[in-house]
Structures are given as C-alpha cells and as structure tokens.
Image 1 (spheres, rainbow, N blue to C red):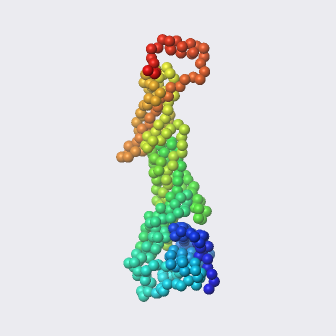
Image 2 (cartoon, helix red, strand yellow; image 1 turned 90 degrees about the horizontal axis):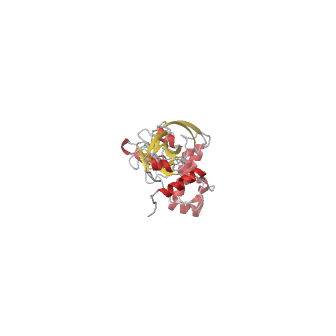
Image 3 (tube, rainbow, N blue to C red; image 1 turned 135 degrees about the horizontal axis):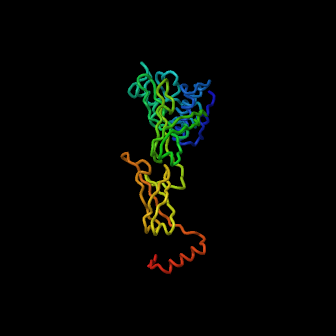
Length: 321
C-alpha cells in the first residue's frame, strides 16, 4: 500500500490541533464538493480529503497512523456508506442491511452535513466567515446553503440618509466576483447587519442558497463623533457672539441648519438638535449635540487690541475666583 500523507492532503502540520484539522477539512470539503466544484478531479480530491479527515479527526486512529502510516489498523465496519461517500467515518451509525439507519434514520446523515455545511458554519468565504444557519438535510437529501458574512463601509451621510449602494465581493476560494445592489436602511448604526436573502453560499442538490449578511462599518468623519445613536459636533463662535448671542450654521449629515446662540454662552455649552442622529430602539432616532467653542483670533489688529484692552479695563467679570 502506497503511503498517503494525510497531513499534506489537509494542508496542516503534523502537530496541528484537532480544531485546525477540522477547519482545514471543512474549507477543503466545501471547495471540492461535487455539487459546488464541477472541475475534473474535484470529486477524487473531495474523497481524498474525507479519507484524511476520517483518520486525523480520531485521536486513536491518528496515533496509529503516526506509528504505522498507511498500514494502520482500520476499525471493523459493517455494510457500506451512502454512494459517493466511501472512506468517511460516520461514528456509530450502522450502514448495514437496509441502508443508513444510525442516529435516527435520515437525521443521522443530516447531522454529518450540518457539521460540514450547517449550523456551526466555518471560516472563509467572500470577505468574511460563514455563519451557517443550516437548513437541514431533509427527506429528499438536500441541504440549504450557508450564510456568508462580509463588511460594508458607509459614510456617515449614507448611514443617516439611507439609500442604495452597489458593492462587489470576491470569493476567496473560487476567485469569482459578483456585484450586488444593497438597500441601506435610513439611520443604520455601526455593527448592525443588512441581510441579502439568497445571496450567500449556494445550496446543494438544488436546495435554496444561504443569505449574505453585511456588517456595517461607518467611516470616520472629522466633523462628527458617534456616541450610540447620537452624534456630536462643534460650532466655532466669536467672543462677542458668545457674550451677546447670535446665530450660527451647524453642519449635520443631511445638510446645514441655522441655530441660535444663547447670550452668555461659554465654551462647552451644548444645544440639542432632536432626531438628527442615527436610528435608536423603538423606531426613534438619536440626536445631534452641537457644542460651542469660543475662538480667539491669533493675531489682533491695533483696533481689536485697543477694544479688548478697553473691555478688560471696564469689565468686572472674573473667570477665576
């Protein structure tokens, strides 16, 4: 019997952890599954990957393989597995007699596919990890495709206004690129997800595809600071506007607004612009807080200096006790 390097087949080192072996197997099994990969030789590669995983996933078999190579002692098995899946270890399931019966009939075979393609998901995919929902194998032997996660970066204006954006994603395994139109809900916040139904991993044997989940990131904006669903900005004002009151324009993500500067405003005073922020719980929106910042000219004209000196002499106000 020719020696088969199962570690090389899975692309892992001989001291790889069980978790690393399982991750490598899942990635390769998805890549070479005959329902996904139609290239010649994909089915053979798929079975080789399954054979390697059968041995390396089991601590006892792995130990024997490390000692004896391809001549490790195989456990006695009865009957045969379902067609196309020779070489897999299905644990305590019984393939003898009338076919697959262990673990509750069809549910037992389904559990194998859930491990491979279903609820646990796995790494890889277009721009992120797969967060599988796992539709189950079902009575007809079909399984729903995995959900896929990616990231979408929005400007603050896009997040507040909402709208439509086209994005292009590339599958790290296949290299295929696809362009999708994404509807951005008005007021979406960082960390929330946009679900595109049926745009995830394809199903198997004609089953529905999974969904694509786009995690929202909002690009930094030097004009605003995000605090939950609220936004914060600064409004520069002159000393006389702060003392006497007046009006100023405030930038918001949806345009400029004219606001009143209350007389006697010190630096740090804030005004609240209701529902000019991001979405909040209960269908409401956050607010925009505009903070006044008193600005002093770096260079004074002779006239300005004389006026400030006159004010300093005439005023009884003391900023410090």
